[in-house]
Length: 100
Image (cartoon, rainbow, N blue to C red; front, side, top):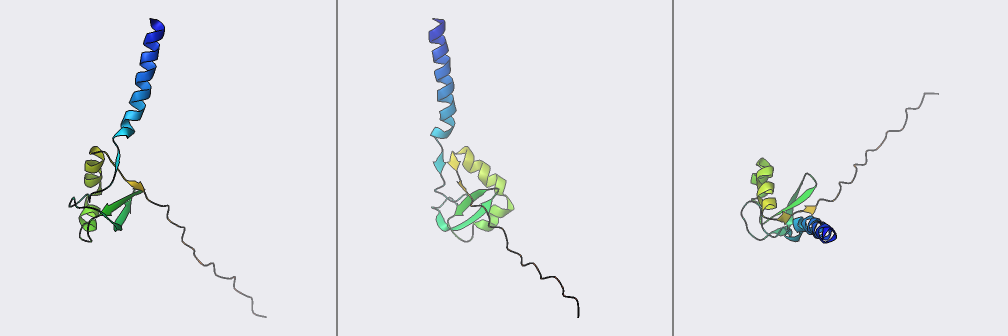
């Protein structure tokens, strides 16, 4: 009986570990107006790529990003990861020459 109880408890932990991701869905709707997203209109925020339905939506989002992100994540939306920014290449000046 103890062995069966242990198996049931272990199975419950395994199931609980997968339930958090079972209902996660990719972003399909704009966080501001709720319309279907246009993948050419987006902003990257805290490592997440946030898509919008139109060019009017990024500004309201930028004013209160956490409000919109929390709402969508509560609905099970998982945002794409934003690609890492490429490091900026800064030219290094050549050392000054001494006059001869």
